[in-house]
Image (cartoon, rainbow, N blue to C red; front, side, top):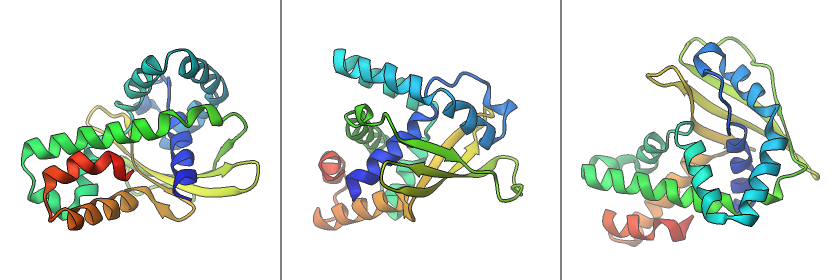
Length: 202
């Protein structure tokens, strides 16, 4: 189940690839819908690159995700109460390891997404906040439909960024926090050891 959810989450990330419009001109839903229009072509392009040059493929993924997903902010949430005990160097190190672990997990799954479809649902109501939004979606696979949503916010440069993803009732950030806390318990709350061992736990 965990692998399936990771693949779905990665597919959601793909919605954002190569979307060049300035996001401050769009609502979060418009941002997602515009990106969705090009998803099939993007998948075909990335699949070819994955097969021909895996290293460059990973670099492309990294460049695409970095300005879109707030890895640093998510990683702080994953660390939870332990982020207050960590040094600045440890915070930065875990952020880097967290990002790398996700990229390593997701890049190998891209080639599998050729027939899946994502429907962006109309917003239930206007958000009370102009800088925050919940985008609700349906992930349609060959066998089932997964309800999903992701939390987005406008950063200081007025660009929409993904802060968290929920698929079929599973909260991505909370899942990773549970894993982090479990590793802390197993490693005597040694943050350095957890950082080293994080990739193997994902």
